[in-house]
Image (cartoon, rainbow, N blue to C red; front, side, top):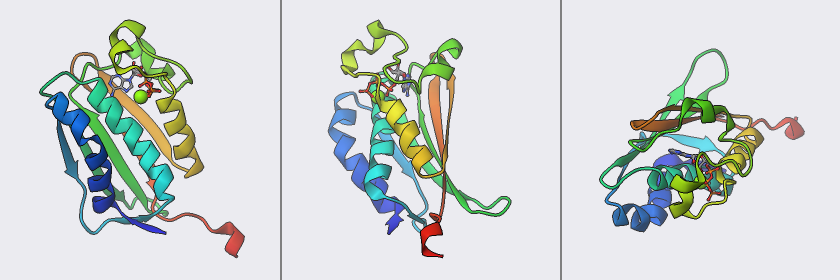
Length: 161
Ligand code: ATP
Ligand code: MG
């Protein structure tokens, strides 16, 4: 069923606002009001809760996590491009290819505070693939990290033909 993305992100941000306030991290949502997409809202919620809470966990006090969404109309099928970018500690180049692996954590020392298990991003990757999307990460150590999720605007209904 259609998900209104602006309201969706208001709801997601709402569930993380306490965590963000504790670290004085600003959560910014830059999502056009007219954007709707077809998706399983629970799965969408798991994807973005994981990415945004990572942004909060791996960003120092006073930083910011920004959520952007826009439509990409290039060649054929319409897609939605989401970017979750933070001003956080970043990920070393050597670790970037591995962060989507189950239980992989960059540095047990530095991420100990979050009490995580290293499963979050592997679940995100799985859910994005279930939606026939793609997931990418770019990062600069000490500057910040951006996760890009590209999802089709419409689901395929092959079973309805
Ligand atoms: P959890 O299972 O609770 O999510 P986690 O956050 O450690 O635990 P993932 O979400 O899979 O696990 O992330 C894997 C690792 O990638 C993290 O431990 C962290 O080192 C690194 N990481 C993830 N997101 C970021 C980010 N936004 N900035 C810096 N490092 C990150
Ligand atoms: Mg995590």
